[in-house]
Length: 626
Image 1 (cartoon, one colour):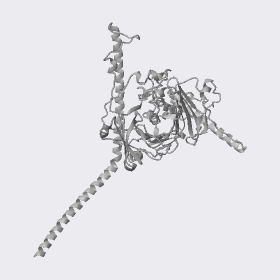
Image 2: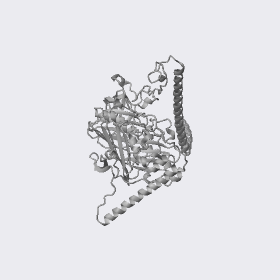
Image 3: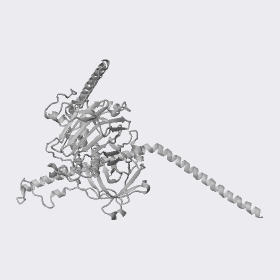
Image 4: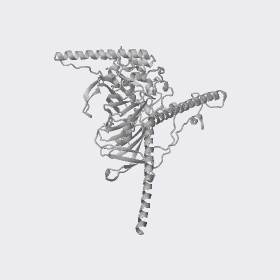
């Protein structure tokens, strides 16, 4: 009897288990089918989603540009209305007091205060931190390899390697329990008047400046320079018909029409890196080498601010081409650059300032067209030396990537790592340029960094974007993780702004998106060398809007350069057959010397250009133009 009951109970349990197993099998099969459907949908619709995201991003950028344009126009109209109203009040109201120059005296609540603009307060969650990686302590220049894509760098940015830190911005010890994101929580006045770019009376007379003041470019220098160039003509061009045969080739070896250019040369573009050279003037007055290094780091980031909307390609300089820019009266510095080599292309530059610093570099680059984007990898090392202290800094530039070469709106991104080294003290600043990613919440064009001394002790942290501003803060407390392997939490003072980008002229959209400085880079001058870029005929024709003539002149100049190169090759072959030494081409203003810092041979400035200019002696300049 018991056996029958047990067998019946077992059978019922087995039946229940079989039913559950069958139900599980059915459910699993349904889930597998659903996953397969999702995978198929993701594979077929992935491109569509990506295009949709790209379209939404472009629409947002267009909306931002439209709103910015409307704001500028609205501000301009308000100023015009105020000006007309003030003129009318002067004529109709006899009781209005006027100043000595005929303008009404300002009073409380005047129109000047109505013209103030404020940014919205940046409300950042108190629990949010930013993390970057500190490199090893050896004195080397780090940069992301050219073979690494921007997408892979974006995915690896959060992983890092080595030692990380998290920093807390605070003004006293009590705020350590309530960390804030490194940044400024305050309203920032946007000055829209001519005083936005003006220097104070002390700095204009050559006296000391206050280092904490954000860097601005004076808008009205002593010498009146042009503020406009001829507008860019609207000429269409089939881009793919030209670029399809250029995949995998060196950019400098591709015969490109001027339609892709902007009317300045690469020599002028290198000089434009010093648009915010007053940062270096302030750095020269600092006694602390680590704080000075923070200013140098901000200066290196400011050089990329012109690339936000400048997608035109500069003219490749001809061998022997030069460019000078003397801004001693306006800003206290002058520059001379020369194309010293053609294969491979290389330019040498030297800048000296009456404020106690000098800079030089030999600039080369490699560039590859990859179909959808263009990689530009700068080569060579930039030098900066302060004469008072002897602090000598060197760094390498990061990689630039031009996106949407074939389809979409061109835009440029900067990515990679940069080490700025002080060879006198051993101080180092490690900067990280975060690449843009569709799937990242990071601030676009973000730059972060830390300044350390020779012992690896951190002194300052930097944060900002290379297209807007850079801030720095002094570290007051350092809490390193266990065994030196964890994250270091830095408590800092309130951040200070080192550099703020100057707004370009509102009319620059029809003028190649040039900045104020770029507007006068190619302005004609009579007393420059005959090899100066200002005298280049194809570049001048393009600036004047004659693109067909510019293309013809460009071909003629390149043919003349090839003929001279073949002549030098024939002379070298003849000298070899006769057993004689052949020196080859020698630059006029630079000579090859051993760089004591890098132990490489580079072209360094001879020091004779400005004397030759004063004596009007340019007889030894080569004939490179038509």
